[in-house]
Image (tube, rainbow, N blue to C red):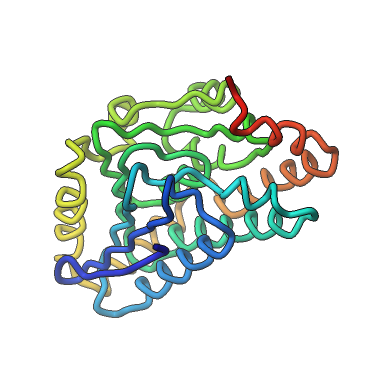
Amino acid sequence: MGVSTASPGKGICLVTVDYPPVNALPVQGWYDLADALRAAGRDPEVRCVVLAAAGRGFNAGVDIKEMQRDTGHAALIGANRGCYEAFSAVYECEVPVVAAVNGFCLGGGIGLIGNADAIVASDDATFGLPELDRGALGAATHLARLVPQHLMRALYYTSRTATAAELHAHGSVWRVVPRDELLDTAVELAGEIARKDGYLIRLAKAAINGIDPVDVHRSYRFEQGFTFEANLSGVADRVRDTFGKEA
């Protein structure tokens, strides 16, 4: 359980997240993921990273139960900072990051893949931000990198999900494949990238980030401020208390 790394091919680092039962990451998990991604990017032998997950789904966001056990704000602050670090580690990874998404990709999962360089998804994958149903806000920055503006808003306000096929139609998912072909397909794409010159691929990643029209760090940090307001006002606790009690 936790975050592990492996080398499925020359120049490729596979980073796998495994936090049963649904890959809802505790505070330390976000930091561990950030550390693994940064270490992979610093490795001169690595030219592409594949970010994958074990189990039922890719990511269910933060561990809400960890927050509910905390009588203060330490878990909230930790989760916000941890997510910021993990999302930044994907975006700032010195080499391209290919996300291999299986099952559900929710909340913080959107933050991860929204900052990735390419996405491969299983045909059962779904994507969404249930933040308003969990007493939180955030990651609209990253959802907006996956779908058009008005669809992003509708998905955000309703907490509905989009399918892998829908994201593929919008051009944000590279390929949609059966789940048993997901990792091989992601590694295949990573292998194609990894065959490029290592120095040049790092320059390419830096160049593309440099011309990005959205400052993902500032934008996400701005969103986080409203999550803190929701908590200080008490509305977040009121909404979170209904988590897991829906009929």
